[in-house]
Image 1 (cartoon, helix red, strand yellow):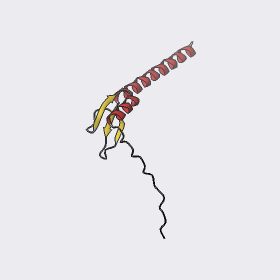
Image 2 (cartoon, rainbow, N blue to C red; image 1 turned 90 degrees about the vertical axis):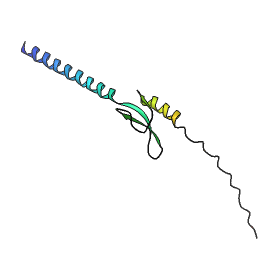
Image 3 (cartoon, rainbow, N blue to C red; image 1 turned 45 degrees about the vertical axis):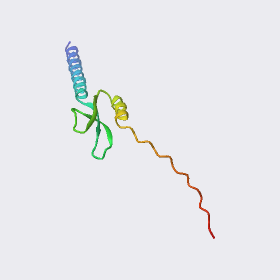
Length: 93
């Protein structure tokens, strides 16, 4: 009989600990959101923050993937120039 009580108490403590840890993790994750910002050098980045930052361009987003899509829309990459073809130089005598 005492073994059953000890086992029940141990299971109850374990279950309570697990539920509290899960709740704390969910709460911590819910605090931060994803934002698109532009730094001082003009580089666009996706960051995770609790609130809006002064350099933000878009946000908040619930997932990093959604923020990355917005970054591509807000900060398009410049078109690359076509490389010039080099012609071999003729030797003059």
